Amino acid sequence: MTMISEKTRRSAQRRKSSAKAGMQIQPYLNFDGRAREAIDFYKKALGAEVVTLMRVKDHPDPEACMPGSPNNVMHACLRIGVSNVMLSDGRGAGEPRFHGISLTITVANDAEGARLFKALADGGQVQMPLAKTFFASSFGMVADRFGVSWMIVVAS
Image (cartoon, rainbow, N blue to C red; front, top):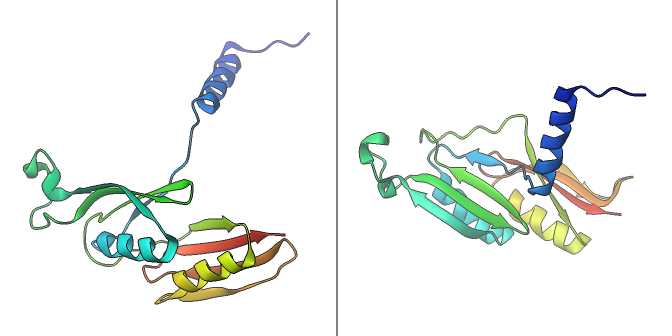
């Protein structure tokens, strides 16, 4: 007979209820003053749709915000495919840094993979050219013009 502790049972219930609630992990990127430029770029490159866009000047308490940046993006949400990517201007210093993280886009065919890879590489840096691999018909890595690392995958 196995004894399950009350703590273990409660933990399992929380995991089960979180899964039922449709828990999602959504990236939140701070573009350090370049969020509006990033939004425009992702609309063009990835077909992103703006779901939410709030500027600093929209905050109900202007005193709670950084002075001198009323048009900065306080919060935005982009729909890219079936996923959401959230973003803001952060502190607005103009030098976004995205180290140790990559966003992955999985697409249905090589032509779409090549189109997205080329669009993201415009003004960016190819880290690994898009090519056939042992695990994908196409795979490549690119850092876009903002320094966000992307991996494009087309399953075999």
